[in-house]
Length: 405
Image (tube, rainbow, N blue to C red; front, side):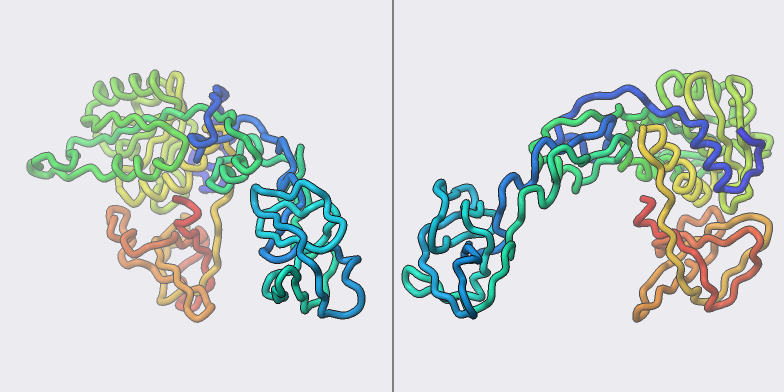
């Protein structure tokens, strides 16, 4: 693991390389697999559709029977509806057919009903017809043996639909990662408690639980540790025994009451401490006796930003998944943006489409304690470490929350 004070991208790459993915698996019903990480690839057991099917309501015909120019008059000799195919091959005439129904043997195209007029036991076809029109051939969606789910892929609602359509009812997934969290600080209280002098309510654990809610993890909340080495050591050792990854907030800076860094180095080791990042410079990463460890800053905005940019991608890897780079969207800056060169910065922004042009503006004061900077935000604005103040109209990179939450 490289030395500390890394840039964000280098730190993330180093931590991902150090991450030891879970290897234990379980077999789940497809109905219970949403959001889990596939532990093995799944191949389609059948062609989909398994028979040539009509893509529209209309009339199934044999193109060779339609001589010359339209209109054509063709006798109707049967009906094929979804789940009720015609058993016999069709030697002459056409068949009334509905969407999803089997194309009867001997017929090769479907004329949509809007291009036809019914005339008793016959149909008048007003348009020219080509072989294969409105027919879904066997395997049009997927061929038997093709991969429909890849190992390491996080299972989405669309994957579930495809698995179900192919008749797959169970999949192998990695077991959920166990994530332990706690905050540190004598000043912190849980919401609902009566605050004393100088005390505030802990927002970080609530926010972290919510940020991790859609990941395949089990979160164990160990509460708030007092600013005493023995209290922090006790919780870290318990969490280390019970979890795969332990995340703390607060106590990793350089204050006299910041004990987390010291205690972690006593019972384990730190590989990284402090980044060239704003907000979120005092981030620690290392290992306890059994588990990996993240020490996040105590300021709420710093906790959120580092959780989005570092912790979530690492947890995806820990769970056996493939970490993807966040979506980056270029936009024009509305108003100016203040930035001191030296550290890469992620400011909270509001991204909008203004008549086809993407624009973004900063959501007010960007102090790392101000959760209010997130209330109107839908993205992070990425500002390179070598840049200074940015003028209105500057092109900037944004990371929409939709790809990160």
